[in-house]
Amino acid sequence: TLGTIEVELSALPQENATTLNMVAQPPLTIELLKILRREGFSAGESFVDLGGDSLSFITASLAIEEHLGFLPDNWENMPIESIDGLRKDTPRRTGLLPSWLSFHRIELPVVLRAIGIILVVLSHAGVANVSGTPLLFVISGMSFARFRLPGIIANSEVRPTVNLILKYGIPAGLWQIFRSLYRGEMPWIPDVFLMGTMWHREPGGQLAFWYLDFLTASILIMTACALSYGYLRRSNINRRLSNNGMTYFLLAMLALALLLFKMQLGTGLWDGEIGVASTGPFRCFWLFVLGSCIQVMTSDERKWLTTAMLAITLCVVTFVIGDDTTWSLFFVTSFLALTFLKTIPVPKIAVQTIAMIASNSLYIYMVNPIIIWHLMPKLGMEHAPLESLALSLVVGIAFGIAWERFTAMAVKVSDFLRKAFKSRLQEGAA
Image 1: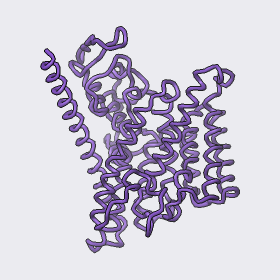
Image 2 (image 1 turned 120 degrees about the vertical axis):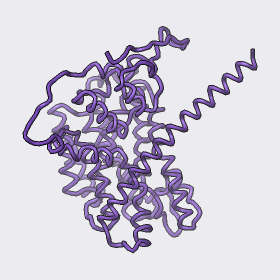
Image 3 (image 1 turned 135 degrees about the horizontal axis):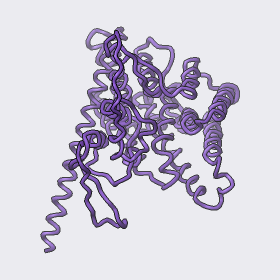
Image 4 (image 1 turned 30 degrees about the vertical axis):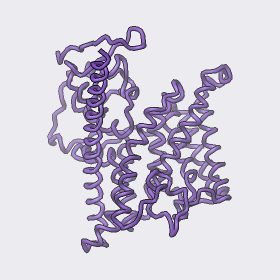
């Protein structure tokens, strides 16, 4: 066996509570706990229960597949200590081609997230006419509905959502401070707190991470509405809608998103005056909601309902609201693929690269403007889009890995200091 599970009975408020730690855990469980930056967990807790998100999900999926030889369906909702027991002793297929030339099935949102951030970088470099940000909003909505929405509705769990925002919000704020100081300017406080798109700044809020501003606002709006819906779901008010409650909730959210978008364009409220990205945060909230619809409506009938919702929404956005800059043929094609396909085959040699780009997409988004607009001109490579793309990907991935390791170390130091302080207090009391 790979080891036995050591169970520690602790005096927690819950009766018969059990806590599992890393001691004598199977290697796969230890690896997953490291990815989640956890030293222990309660029996029966899943990846989602432990605060896993879409970015750590990609890394965890690769680790599980490496250990098991396959990726179990819905593994993120299984008890984390039971995943290693799913190992199958099946013979590996052999063929004429080497393994690195074979194809490997990977989740479509992971592939499209990587493609989306590459398009963002190329658009900043001036060579891509198609924006990847609408697609990224849809994928973010899917991830939120997959990892965060169930806990919010069922148990009003908001701490993992706050941790998710802090995961990218803190480095984004620090990067904004660094970028402002690099340009010889004082940091613009709304930019530091991911609100720069929503406040006018003379001569303009060009330093704003508008995608992160909109993403954070979308997450907070959806969280607030989900908390209200969860309260209704747990009460007698929503008994009649219990079977289709989530569908009605998302339809209501989509209608609300379009209404707020129309009202905001008409009033100019929260207009940061940074071009097409102005009037945050409602310009792209409907994309976030549509992504949640894809994730929740998985039956064949509801997939067609999601497709109809897309068609109706695009008509409303284009002809009623008057915005034809948000979506494109690439966006529609990708949306339909996300609706009807779960995985696609890709060359095995490219899997690790795709996963690295996708899991560090937010960090790539943070670093690419200063590389393309400031560093490359100083290197005499102002019109070198491929070199700009390569450098942005490398620096973004390195920044993401470094930040993850720094935060993991900070958590360990914080836990050590907290335990030492608690021990001193107990000694003093004795």
